[in-house]
Amino acid sequence: MTRSICLNADIGELPGINGRALDRAMLDVVTRCSIACGGHAGDQESMAATVKAADARNVQMGAHPSYPDREGFGRQDMKMSRVELSATLLNQVRALAAIARERGVAISHLKPHGALYNTAARDEDVARTIVDVTIQSRIPLLIGPPNSRLQAAADYAGLAYLAEGFADRSYEASGHLTPRTMGGAVIESDADRIRQAVQIASTGTVTTRTGETIDLAVQTICVHGDTPGALASARNIRDALQDASIIVAPVEP
Image (cartoon, rainbow, N blue to C red):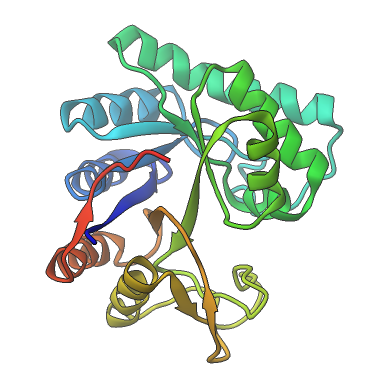
């Protein structure tokens, strides 16, 4: 049986000319991208440039909203009511959607960022809010953690969902990502990133930070665009997946 996996990256997060150059290079490698839309990073210029670059390369593009936390890069958990959270997420998504609409392209998915992503994995109210925003924005697909409150909320609402694994983050025995406050949360070695991506894609398992092998059934693997060495890792991961006879494609649920 031929296996397929989507390779995605979070982009539009780094500033200036160098940030846009890295985004373009990443878009030559991945099959989906999630674009920062103002909550933790990104502005009108970066969104417009990234939409243009993704469209030119026929890469599926999505919104990457977050808590309104530019100072903390969206990595600080924030206590917000469902009304408040919905409003800030809708504002972010609409800003990106307007730019995409001007270019005549569609937003194909939504993927929450950072602390919002992690909170949605375990908090039903946050998960339901994200699902509601996705549906209200007429976005057909949600990307997030497997076996999570977010996936359950999407399934309940009839919203298509891609479960996601990470090449550059370590996992705990619970199946959750290792918190960034802990040592070893970010996988530094390119060889280890490649090994983890191929393991996830080929076996549906991952080796945890403490050495256990656990199930991790996902349809897409992310390489963070802001991780040092991300571009080289993304290229090497794609090559390794193809060498393992795994098709790298956008993948639909």
